[in-house]
Length: 273
Image (cartoon, rainbow, N blue to C red; front, side, top):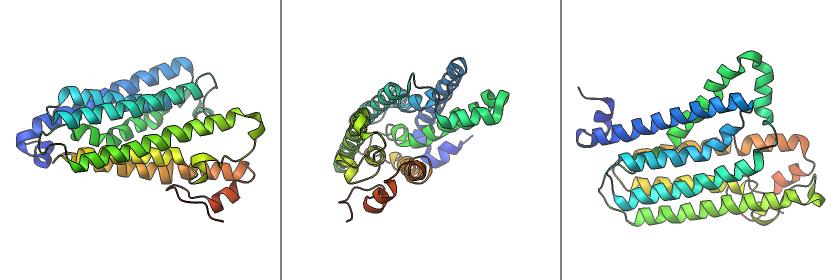
């Protein structure tokens, strides 16, 4: 019998593609169920945010272990994903642990009461697991085929990834330093990278995944993985990232309206006067 994967990816590499994709899906499912169980004990669903970055690291190494693709491309995808994922996980763990459950999950907990445990499995942990699977497709599919080898598109991808990790890491560090200063309480962060974009960390996140997508796209199967950075960028710009944060800050932070009027919402550029 010819599977859906056989039809899409070709019979000669269907088994390998199927193994990698299926292995990644199983790894994500097992991890999210485990994190969900821990959240019930802790009564804190916020740990799913910490698991987000580390989950991609798991997917990268499972794919690396199962694949037989180009060694340079596979190693790059795995190592670069690991650097990004661990940095994000440690940053969020340091920022969030010990500060109570995020207000979003507190609101859900009040709304659903005794049903929150099962509701959170599907709407929080299950949904994030599904998104993780889709976004990580370049890391999965980019490791499947040997040919063509690593070339100029891959080099461009590494450079884009480098720009992304710089904006994300430096942006996070600048914001953390700004918040630590009591003199900045109630003020809008508009210094450093935040002078050129309201969300340098989100812009960096998007660049990281477009970089990984370009590295993967150099392989004949990896090009299908470009759905990953498309979905990630859409989420960051329109759904759970910049748009949601801007709405919240416009309601409660004086001066943010002027910041919105003068500063790019995503792609860095000089501020408007």
